[in-house]
Image: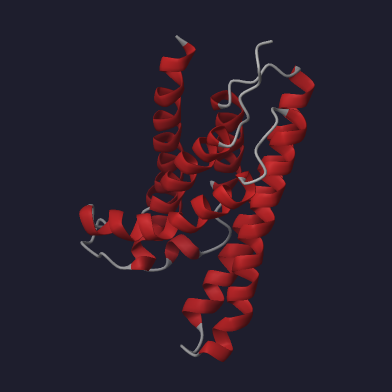
Amino acid sequence: MRAFSRPVVLLCGALFAWGLWFMEVCWIKGWAGLAWLAGFNWSALPICCLIATMSMYIMDVHSKSRQRWAFVAAASLSMLGGFVACRWAMFEIFSGPTTVRHAFPALVILIGTLIGVSVVLTFAANRWLSPLHRWTTVSILCALIMVMPLSVFTIKAFPALNGSTDTVHSIKMGYPVFWASLLVPLFLTIGRKRLSSR
C-alpha cells in the first residue's frame, strides 16, 4: 500500500508546492508586471518544508521520529538558504548588463549554492534517514540543474497567463518549484542503499 502511495504523494505534493507559489504570485503579490518580485517570496518557506517532508516520507525510512524531524529541519533550512542565494543570483544575472564580467560572480554563487544544497541534503539524509550511495550528491546536483531546462520546456507547452513562453515567465509560473519538488525526493530515494535482510 505504501509503495503505491509514494508516487501519489510525490506528484500531489509537487502540485501542491506549485500551487503555493502560484497562489502567492496571483492572489497576494499580483500577476501584473514585476509585482511578484516585490519583497520576499514567502511561499518558499512552506515549499521548502514540504519538499523536506516529502523526501522523508518517500524514502520509506524506519528511523526514529527525532531523527526524521532533524532531517526535515536541516533540509528545509538548506533549501531555504539556497533559494535566497539563487534568487539574488538570478536578480544579478537578469537585471544588470548582459556581459560575462557582470554575470560571473552571480554564476559562481549560483553553482556554489547548488553544490552546497546537494551536499547538505545528502549528508542529512545519510545521517538521519538511511545510508546513501556516494554518488547521491552528484545525482541531487544533476536534479537541481535539470530544474530550469525542464521549466523552460514546460513553459513552451503550458504558457504563462499572458501567453509568454520565456525563461522569466517560467519562474513566475512556478515551474521550477514543481520540478524541484518532484526531483529532489525522487533522486534522494534513488540514492538510498538497499540494506540486506540477513
